[in-house]
Length: 382
Image (cartoon, rainbow, N blue to C red; front, side, top):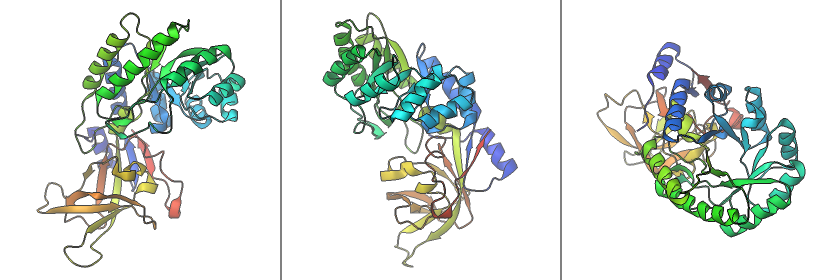
């Protein structure tokens, strides 16, 4: 279950920051990175900076020896500005415009993902002699935020593409997959590793010297429901690697984002309004916050990610009821939880400050720049 670190508790008490705001404990990020390094011994950890590209996080992880997964030229520039070498970057997005490819190559990025023929030819033209890896489509069963539709290709097509890469004077270095974000099943990784190993063997039989398997991200944060700990995943993944790569294990890449920074962050928000608009006790109770889907909580889309709320009445409340949770904007889709309502204290009222836990990932980056005139939330990295 998600928790709030003592460091964040002290910060809130001492500073009483205006809402909405995000507070991230950098020591918690460091501890999670160290835990991941311990459990995935020998693997290269590429932080997916789209989860939270704050300079303080990038600098802390860089000092710890992390690598970085980037998805745009802008993210590359953010890493370079934080003092990160281009050699530590992987351009892991399979959809890149020609300008981004050309500039990334000029800046020294040499590792690129692809999943189709046209992208492969673009890389060969605008980033010649680079190392490339092909992304496979794999099952995302068990993920709260599936990623299987937009990216990846079949193993048969990947086989043809990897052979073609060598003909284009690119270095066909390996394969990648992603089992979906907030993945709660280790079986998804095991199935994907088995799928990738079969293709590895086919390509190696054709003389390709593959040495990289990128198993993506997907490791979960702790929201309202319990999820397995990292040992559960690392044990299953290591067993699958030993089974399917018995003679020589390739270099393993991980691309965690949420799992590194999610639990380290807390959003502080204010209750703007509570209401039963029909006036009857049986009407649904609405709780409007000063942060919503446009303010950074975009992952509540489809009620996929269910954050845990902490209110000032949790320990003293005599009654609670299910609430619809909505944001502050004048837009009817700015509703976070309606089908699966949140049970909150009936004492909750306008002006109360609430905490939304495990919000270190995919909040600051999803925040709009000023929809309805609401400014982006303030961020504190401590």
